[in-house]
Length: 119
Image (cartoon, helix red, strand yellow):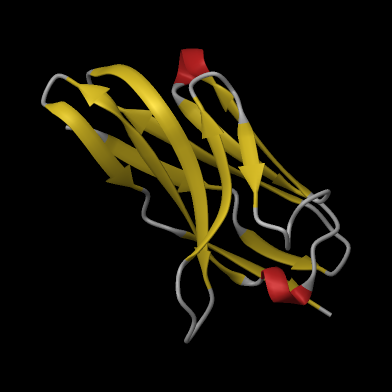
């Protein structure tokens, strides 16, 4: 059983910053990759950022230079530092983790956290 708990969302003015966190719990043996997705109302879920077990990162073009994904292996936690926020960043942000646990390979999703950027 692997659970993800997200936090850090909120309301911020354009140009501001937020840091999202996603902590995985359970009998985790290894984490292969962590992802941040976002979904705006009426839109498809969009992959925002990826970090692998070797800390290789990838970003959507829309957030490059503004967002930074990182991980704390000791805490099984992934972060998304969001700077220079824009109204179009408004969405529910979800973390996703792929790895291995006592139950076998898993893919787990966080509950989502709302990010609202006002202009």
